[in-house]
Amino acid sequence: MNEDLENIKDPAAIKDRKFVEALSRGLDVLRAFSQGSVVMGNQDIARITGLPKPTVSRMTYTLTKLGYLSYSTQLEKYQLDSGVLALGYAYVSNLRVRQLAKPYMDEFARTTNTSVGLTCRDRLSMIYVENCRPAETTSLRMDVGVRLPLATTAAGRAYLAAMKEEERSHVITALKARSPETWAETEVGLESAFADYTKHGFCLSLGDWDRNVNAAGVPLHLQDGTLMALTCGAPSYLVSEEKVKNQLAHQLAMLARDIERLGV
Image 1 (tube, rainbow, N blue to C red):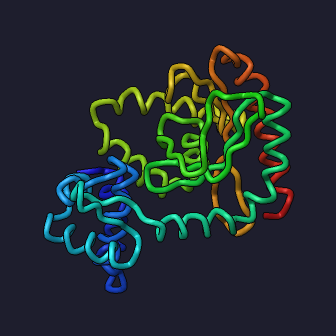
Image 2: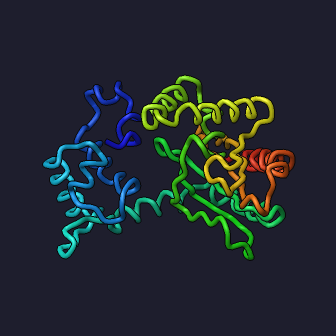
């Protein structure tokens, strides 16, 4: 069973009489495609979601009828269809902070020669909603929609550090349950990141997510209370740990404050 889909749910919400379990399960089926293969059968989806196969069959049939999944008779498997793309595009295109922040992110990427990302959280992942990088740079390409792990990336650590304590505790419990065998190492990295945030206002990931990538992350607080995260990074052969820690991370924190002053 995929812990991303199970452990992050709020038990109180599931017991809520207004909570529609069937809708929740249908969304879990759609989310499964971000955890597994691009093309999956009902058995694959059942394995990822932990839902009974008959339930999955009803969900995939309904989602296909509604245009959110398409079915290949040749492969006897499903894949996401244009209905999902339309929803995602509508969200990203109407995200005002993305539109206002992009010129600032473009300038930052150009002057620092790094990849700069604007991310939001989805359960135990961070998702890119915007990415800017120098035109001549071909490395560290992160397209809109790419998912990042929450616990080992600079963006995820910055997001966690800025969360309210009760909510952060709930998410960390889910992270631990998902990967108990590596939790001791993950927890050390998180504690170090939280200490950096308390002291400097940013978090680092120096080879923790990808041993060849150094990155910094800072939270972004929007006026409506929404929390997002900015991140910048580059391959370690281009940007040293010292440069990220002593220069880029501080500049990224200033970029976040500039964007917040836009009133988004």
